Length: 135
Image 1 (cartoon, helix red, strand yellow):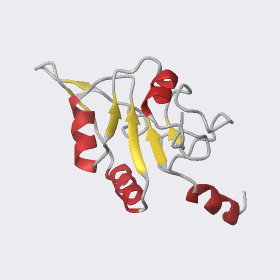
Image 2 (cartoon, rainbow, N blue to C red; image 1 turned 135 degrees about the horizontal axis):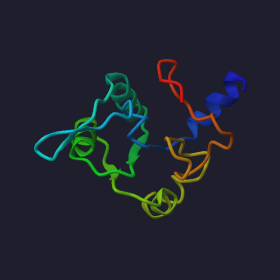
Image 3 (cartoon, rainbow, N blue to C red; image 1 turned 30 degrees about the horizontal axis):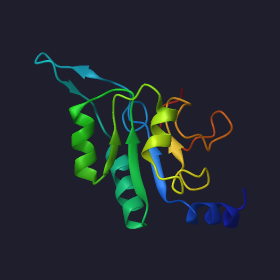
Image 4 (cartoon, one colour; image 1 turned 90 degrees about the vertical axis):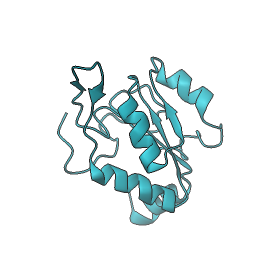
């Protein structure tokens, strides 16, 4: 894709939806003796969220698991839309985002499952950094 075409597609974005485990984390879930859990979030992902907000984009998290660590990280980053414990991500995304924000050209998603709003039509075409572990 030419740089100009990519830039035009990016200008149309309004909402970035992301899974959590394996996307914003390395997928490791530490189960703590007190019954809680811990996850490791990378600072580069946090920076990406901050930069998205500065660019005027809204951000959202859609996760199959429920975790206070995710809620806390979302609060730290100013992510206002957080849906956790979601078994049917496609249905949840239809209920959760305004129709205009969920048009395929307006909301990229990034996730380890293929059930989130699906603008990425080809397997493996989801954006990920060079430093992301191979799947």
